[in-house]
Length: 245
Image (cartoon, rainbow, N blue to C red; front, side):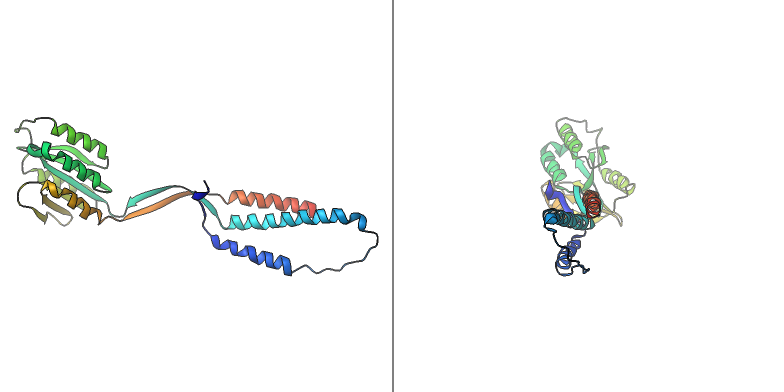
């Protein structure tokens, strides 16, 4: 529990040794009067002095803790500084053989919205851009286990459709991964859209390259706890004033 508690201003604890030194060596000077036969009150005076000292140090200690601003971290939110969107353009005829490579690529790519376009003789958008990888796994498994009519599915227009989807998206980095067994190449379709014509065996290499370009920032969510030591200090101060007078 205490592992999640820290202080925003820990330098406030420097006041504690300063107070101890001043309390020890900078005594208040006042006139004293000698009065005989005060032994009767000596015991009560010692008890009262000890109580006041405890209260005084309690007031200062908890006031300094409150000043140091203790906080408890509730959770850490990670987000990318550069949003990325990827469209996978997949040939249906080879899907059963390369489905494991595709799922591994989806699993390994970080902080990226992924969409899936399937093609053979026509084009079909089987998954819009989404962060939900579990749905994409199910889509790949479902498509690779069924035989679709070649007249219904895709062709070369899949790249144009992928480009159209990405142009409507606000991501700062837009990528089309066209899975092919032909010559591999990397080209730019526009200023913001990059096209990979890639063999399925090279998918993990692409995931590694793109992950290296992602910067992750952590944002910590915490609650302030200064109120509790402040209350202890305030109540001790009230008791101190009451006992002092």
